[in-house]
Image 1 (cartoon, one colour):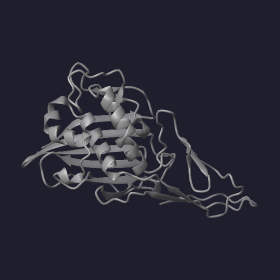
Image 2: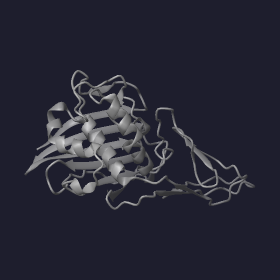
Image 3: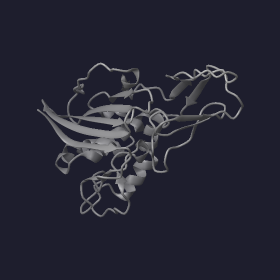
Image 4: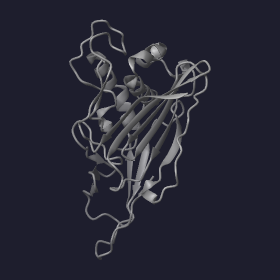
Length: 286
C-alpha cells in the first residue's frame, strides 16, 4: 500500500497558505539536542528553489546554519542554473554569468541576456561552468529535505540516516545506491510558476520505501530512499504524450556516487542578423 504522507503546492511564489512540520517544544529532529534554540525559521526545502511556504519547526538554529552553509549550497551548484528554472530565492531572482562576462537574468516571461563585448554573433553559444560540486553533500541535501518533511511518527525509522546525514561518512554506509531522477522542461512562459511536493511511503519486505517527488517550475526531482532495504524500489508515475515541445520533460538517472564533480551547461542562441529585421528563433538548451 502506498501512502501519501506529505503533499503541498505553492503557486506563483505565494507566501500562503503555509505548511509547518513538527513543533518547537521538544528536541531538534536532526541533532536530538534537548535544549535547542528555534529563533530562526527553517525552510524545509531550500529557499533558493523558491520555497516560501513550507517550514520545519523542530530544526534548531545550529542545524539550520550547518545545512544552509554546507550541503544546500552543493545542491544549488549541482542543479541547472537558477535562470533556467526562474528561481526566486531569498533575494529575488539572481543575475548569473557565463564565460566572457555575459550576464543572464530570467523573470516570469523573458530570459534577459547582456553581452558586454558588443553585438553578439549569430548562433552564439554561452557556456556555464559551475563551481566544484560535492556530490555527496548534494545527495545529503536531498535526504535532508525528505527528513524535513517527515511527520514525527516516522522519524524513528531514520535514526541511522540522521547520524549519517550529519557525519562526514561517504556513500559506503548506505543500504542502496544514491540515485535520483532529475528532469527538466525547456523554459517557457506558458509553463506554470509552481512548487509541487509530494512524499509517499510504502511498506515493503524488510522496511519501508520513501519517494520524494518535487517540481520547481520546470525542474523535476524524484528521490527514492529506504532506511533498510538493499534495493531502491520506486514507482514511476504515469504520463501522457506532450502536446507541445515545451511540455516535454526529459529525465535522466543520476548516481551521485559516480556523477561528475564539474557541471557544464551550454545555451546555444539562434540569433538574428541585427542588421536586418529578422525575428529570433528558439534557443537550444543542453
